[in-house]
Structure formats: structure tokens, C-alpha cells
Figure (cartoon, rainbow, N blue to C red):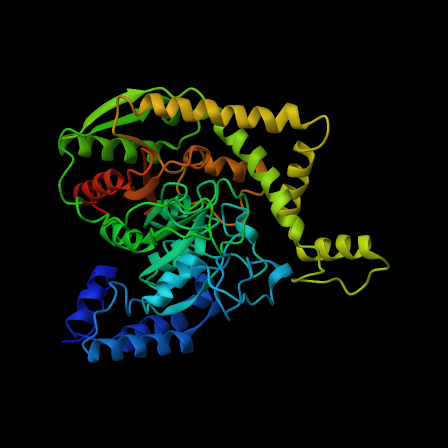
Length: 480
């Protein structure tokens, strides 16, 4: 026996490694070969780390040969979005500002996987600093959707989703600030989880909007996703926002079914603005869940319509603050021509940042300025509070909330040039970031042209197990 030619799940790879059907070296070479063969078409990777991955794979094989007890993900290759720090490996945020930045430490999540002896195949492209929904706002060029190379893979974790969908990696880490794991998961046809805020440490994630940033997981199957979250959900004493909770196995109740589960559909998410094919696919999937034993309920969450406005005000304000450290003095790009310190700051930032990053910095600076803070920023914070209250009320009568992940399927690269058009891609996903609630996108069908459609489940705080249970049930019911 040997390595299967079909794309394997994480759990299949782990089983094959443990039963010695193949070695970690063999599986790492296979995925590295796949990257070499197709990534010039996709442009998913910024940095490929094949040599380091092979060293890790050989170390994993040695541990198994010695009869050591190995972690569940030992020998399973993966990719990491390039705004998550990796010691000794370039971490660019897809920005000219950080094109030569090599972190002296690993992000906590990356360190967990390194200690598990999971081979890191490389760093994945993104919208610069995570600001975008198409993976076109990158210093390294746009990534393409493997389902149709003329389409966007979504963003900002578009390359993480594309690499998983194309079989370049068995799983990938992405980040989700307003939907940046779930939206590309929907566009590419993979599973994307944004856990509860604080469930996975943000230590080593280069900040965009600190109160909304999450590290998320992209996989081919729901079970794989639950398996990886079980490994990453560990308390980090160096991250004040990381929750100190007992370690959980998120796979343990995944097969128990959804009979009697109450699933709510907010009417605000099924009105104007949603593409007909997307709406039909999501409602058809909801009916399949009902046949599997769930109870469907229609609810209203009035402030959902204001969530997108609050998100772009608050996230831009936090981006303005977080990106102030990029000044050309301590690290990153430094302008060659300047006459004084102020001109050094101005020229370095002007040359180093792309258009979308500049736009959000300027927006954030404006909404925090004297005379505007009360008008915009404070009102946005109040909207967040009202939205949290509405979700709490909704969860008094439901177990889970079901929505489309995106208003449309993947669209052509280069077509949505207006910032407003792109921002509206996040209209169904931002509420989970504003509230810190866990949310997952699962494939639920395809359009007539063959593009994937994603369905989103939003759960109660820290109730990822119910999300995985519902997502797994959907995976069994819907052909994809």
C-alpha cells in the first residue's frame, strides 16, 4: 500500500502515518510536489519552506520509529497565513512594509504545531494586513480560486482557503477579523471555523483590529476542523485575551446527530441583496437539516443591518492605532529619502502601505478625531452592545443560528473595484466578530456554473461543539 492519489483528509493522513502506510517524509514530499506543480497558477504561497518541512517530517518519522507517543498532528503538513509570526521565516502581511521581516519568535498557535512536529509547507498570501475580501490587495499579487481561476478566492484568508481546496495543504491557519476565514471558505468550498474570541491565542498574530481578530482553521472536512481546534485551544498566559479553560476534545460529540436541535434563521439575512442561487442553496440545506431532525425557527435580530457599519468604523479605528508602530524606525521598510523625522515617517508609510491599508488608517484616524469620535466611534460601540444583547435574547430560544455565509458566490477578479462593494461581502459574517461568538462556514451546494455556496452557523459563546455537530450533520446530508 502507499499514498492515495485522491486528496486526503487530516484524519486520513494521521491514520496512515500511525499505521505506517506511508511516512511523514513521503506525505510532505507529495504536498511539496503539488505546490510546485500548481501554485504558479494559484499564487497562494508567498514563501515555500519545503526544506524545513522535510526536516520536521523526518523528525516525526524518527519519533514513530522509536515508538514514542506522538501528538495527533505529528507529520501532518499545513500552511499558515502570512500575518501569523513564524520564527526564522519571513512574515510579510503581504505588504511592502514587511517584505523582509523575519520574526524572532513563533506565534503561539504556530508553536503548538511546531512542537507537534507538523511540517510547515509555507506562508500563505492574503490581503495586505488582512484588510480586504478578495486577496487582491497584496504586494505579491492576487490569488485565484481553484474552482475557477478567473474568480476571487475571497479574503483576506483567500490563499489559506484556496490552498486547502486545491490540495496544496491538508489544512491551513487563517485569521478572521470580519469574516476573513468564513467568506473565503464559502467561495472555495471548504470548511472555515472562527472560534469564540479568546479560544485560540492571538499571541504572534500581527494585529489589524485587536478586539475582532481571531485565528481560524480551514480544512476539507468538519471532523478535521474539530480535531485541529482541539489541539490549538490551549491557554496562553502571554495573551491577556486568551481564555483559561480546560482542554476540550471538540470531536467527541460530533456524531451524535441533531434530532431536537433548534436552528433559527434570521429574516434580516434572507431579504434584499442575496443572490437567488445562494439563497436557494442555503434554504434547501436548512430543509435537509429539518429532515434530519432539527427544528427550524424564524427570528429577527434588528441590529444585524447596522453591524457592517459598526464593524468598519471600529475596525478602522483599531487599525489606525495598531499600525502606528510601522514608522520606518524600528523595523520594516524605511524610506531612503527624508530630511527630518516627520518626513521619514511620512515617506516610509506612504511607500510601504498599499491603497486599502491607507484608506482604513485614514478612516480610523478620522472617526477617532475630535468632534467625530462621539458621532461615529461611540455610536458604533453602542451598536455592538445592542447586537450582543439581541444575540443573547435569540439564544434563549434557539441552539444555533443559520445564515448564508456570503451574499453571492465567488465573483470575477478585478470587478468589484469600489470599496463599498467589497465591504458588503462581509455583511453576513461581521456580526460574529462584533459579538465574539463562534461561527463556521460549511459548503452546502453549488451554483449552476459550479461555484461553491457556503452556509454559516453561529453558536453560543464557547459552544463550538454544537456548531461542529450541526456542521457535520449538514456535511452528511448535502452532496458537495
